[in-house]
Length: 298
Image 1 (cartoon, one colour):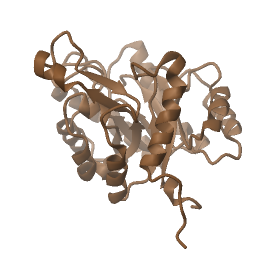
Image 2 (cartoon, rainbow, N blue to C red; image 1 turned 180 degrees about the vertical axis):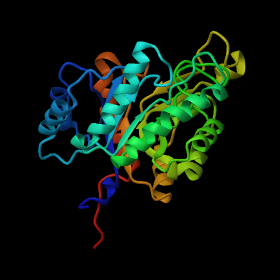
Image 3 (tube, rainbow, N blue to C red; image 1 turned 60 degrees about the vertical axis):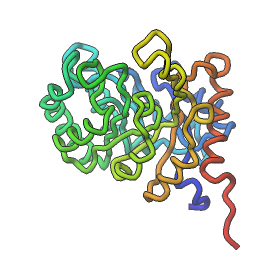
Image 4 (tube, rainbow, N blue to C red; image 1 turned 180 degrees about the horizontal axis):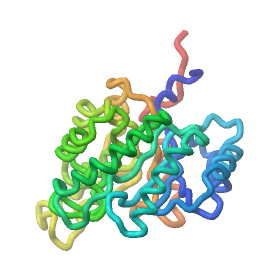
C-alpha cells in the first residue's frame, strides 16, 4: 500500500435505493472520501450488477473502495417487508464481489415486542444459514450496534446493541464470519463507555461507522434519562464527545484495518442544507485523528 495511513480509510454511506447513487458518488468524491458504503433500508429494489457497474464507473481511477454494503431491516420476522429484507441480505451476499465488498452489514432482526432471549432460536436459524451462504462467497456479516429505540425487554429491529447480547448471539452462531459494525455513538446513547469495547471486541469488529454522540450530563442530573428533556444527541464525528484520536489509536493497537464510513443524516445541527458541510468536516476531522497527512520515513 502506497499510503499506510489508509490501512484505516475514511469514507461515507450512500443510499443505494436513491434514484441515481452513482451521480451522488461522482459529486462527493472531490471532497476526499476514501471509501463508500452503499446501503438499503428494508427493501433492496435495485439491479445489483447494474448498480455495481455504475458505482465502479463513477469511482473510476480514484483510490476509493466499497468494502462494505448495508442492508437494514428485520430479517427475523415474517411480514412481507421482513421477507424482503432477508432477500436483500441474500442478494447482497451473492453480488458482493461485483462491488469489491467483503462485508455485508445491518441489523440482526428481532422477534418484535419480546425480550432478547426470545429472539435467539430464530436468530440461530436465520443467521446460521446466512453465515454459511456468506462463507461460501468469502463474505463477512456485521451487525450494527444500534438499538433502534429498543432495549433488553422489547424492540422492533435489532438485538446486537449490548455487549451482553453480543456474547449470546456469537455463542448461538459461533461462525468466524459473523461480527460487528461498531460505532461509539450507540453505546454512548446507553451510557456505556465505548473505548474498552475495542480492546475486547476488536477481532469481531468488521466495520466501523463514523457516528458520535453528545451526552447532556446536566440534563441527566436534573431530569434523568426517562424525562421529557432529551439527554443525548447523535452527532457526526468532530461535533460530539468522542475523542476519535483515541478510537483510531485503539483500533491500530489492536491491529485493525478497514474503513470508517460516516453515517450522516442524524446530527441535529448539521443536517438538511448543512448535511454535506457536516460530513466533510467529519471527513477531515477523522483524517486528522488518523494522524493527518502521511509522511514517509527517511
